[in-house]
Image 1 (cartoon, one colour):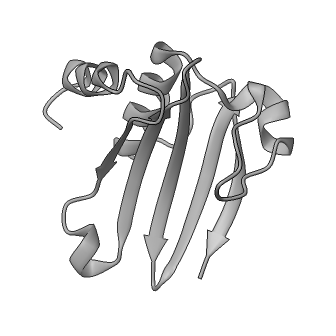
Image 2: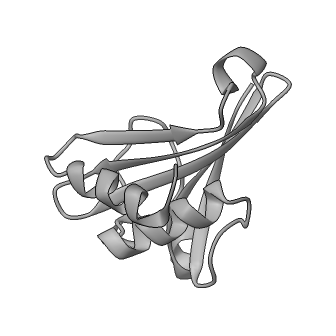
Length: 116
């Protein structure tokens, strides 16, 4: 990514229910080490997940607003809880912060799922 505005533009293109976008560290597929962020349009907003891949283990956090997002769960193939459905601004803020290595912005929560 060259800029925050470029990421926002890409997220805006994810505009039909079920469309999704993944942005990942360069070389993640070959090195199996790095991070990625993905957003899927739910029809009402964006489901955002961020992940760290290291030594064959992938830790994926489903992001939402506040503490209720921590408790909402993160099971594959299960829809998002209301607290995990973000607006464009929220999705952009989370993805940019994560991809810049800063973790989650204040006010957001996350539910963890681990693949090994």
